[in-house]
Image 1 (cartoon, rainbow, N blue to C red):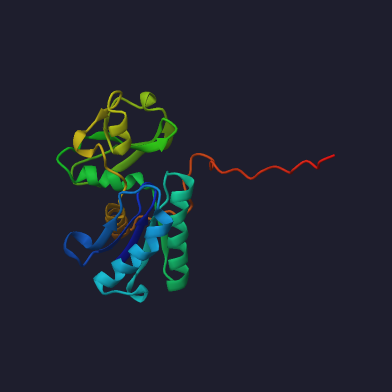
Image 2 (cartoon, rainbow, N blue to C red; image 1 turned 30 degrees about the vertical axis):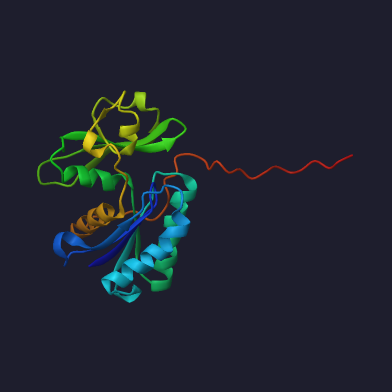
Length: 223
C-alpha cells in the first residue's frame, strides 16, 4: 500500500510511505516555517511525487493530520488532502497530528511507559495528549488532545516543541525540544494501523479553539 501523508498542524510536511519500502519510507519533505503552508504545500507535494516517480493513480490512500493546530495552517493541509482524494478518487483518512511525535518517541531510546506529546498552541498555551507505551506495541492514546497552560499538565516526561518552550515547568526531553508533528511519522503510524485492520477516523479537524478571524457584525447606518 502506498500512502500520501500530509500534515500542516505546525510546519508543512508531506510524505510517501509504503509497506513495500525500506522502513516504509519512499520520500518526504518538511519545512521549518510555521506560517507559509498554503504557499509551499502544493509545490512540495508535486515535487515529492515527481522525485518518487509516482502519480496520483499510484496512490492507494491519503492521510491528513487533523490537528490540533492553528485554524489557518491546519485548514491548508486538510483542504489539500480532500481535494487530492476527490480528484484521484482515493480514500481519505485522518490522524491526530500529535500521534506523529508519539511514534517518533516510541522508536527512540527516550521512550517511557507513559509520556506527553506537547506542541505550541500560542497565546502562552500548549496542545497536548498523554500516551502509554508497551514493549513492541504502537503508542496508545490515553488522554487528549487538550489545550492548556503548560503548568497544568500532568507530571510526566514531555516531548515536542511545546515542551521545549516551557522546559522550566515541564519535564521536557532536550532531544525532542524542537520536534514538530511530521507527515512521515504520521503516514507510518497510519500504515501500521491499517495493516492491523484498525479503522481510522475521517478528516474532521481538531481545532480545539475558535479561529482568531471573526465575521464582523452588521454595520450601523449613519444618521
